[in-house]
Length: 219
Image (cartoon, rainbow, N blue to C red):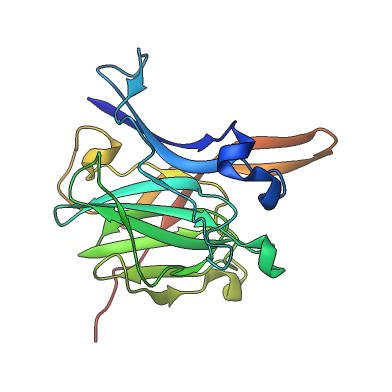
């Protein structure tokens, strides 16, 4: 089967309170399923996997967006971004929800948010999970359990531009398709979007790139 996670927009303002959230309709994370990539696709669950918080003080009050799934040690981790503009901040942060099954039920991690970033690419790697948050000043994070994170590299401090809104092909990971190797490569390739000089309307280009990592060293 093929699975597709997505951010769903709410259309009922009276029910979902968009008037309090500056018109942001990104209410919940949903899941579609199909027997083949070209469809037909159908909802895998009757309701969203999880939704933004109804608590005006919560960090994820505005919306939930940019879901990225990782299957790790028998559990599904969905990383997502949000913010709370009611508290005077426009910066987005990263959170995670966890389930035993791809269809849920998902439980948001009690200590969210876990780091900054405007979305992220996340994958199982070197016995843990690696995260490349977009807009996090180029820092790379690694976690042994998918919940507690450590900064393991800061390419931006060395003048290296990290990918923006990227996705990598992982030849060892079933989430990238049928694995073609059991080895975790130190060099991976993928696609990213880069904004062009066109501002009105805003235009983006798709760029192919290669990233090389060194193995994570534990002390």
